[in-house]
Length: 178
Image 1 (cartoon, rainbow, N blue to C red):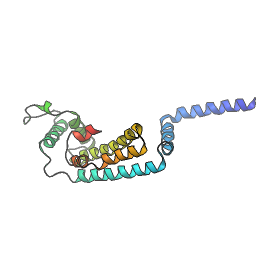
Image 2 (cartoon, rainbow, N blue to C red):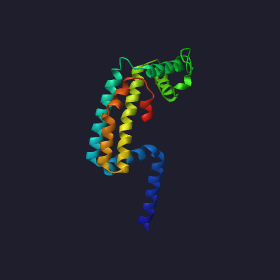
Image 3 (tube, one colour):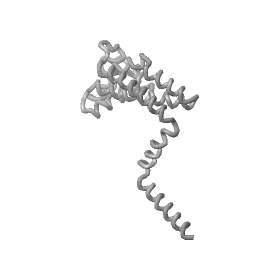
């Protein structure tokens, strides 16, 4: 049957094309399926919550705390030492194991990526992680209950004052939340 042969050839062509495009095609399909899975209104509400949440975090990151506290100064010093000397700690640290290495490594990575000790860049990365955390909260709330619960969870994370305030200093908690 000619239709069968044409269908098989078409299928082989699609399979070959899928192998060539691979991940970009799969990502495109996933993105196009978002409105069906989550609902267009929900996606608009989530985008608004994420945008405002990120804006609040970015504002705090670019206008840091005047007195960030001892922990923030310690994480800054550890990150700076990792970037400049490749060491973890220094003469002012009695026991560098008092501070978990995750945040200093992340911040030092930002310093390497930007070519210098730039606190604003490190805090902006934390603001981006905060925006991603808002999405994760939505997904968890939606999975556990429903779309409105996911949006309430996202809004709670987006507008919780402590989560916003902590973007004004280099601490370990904001990246750990993500």
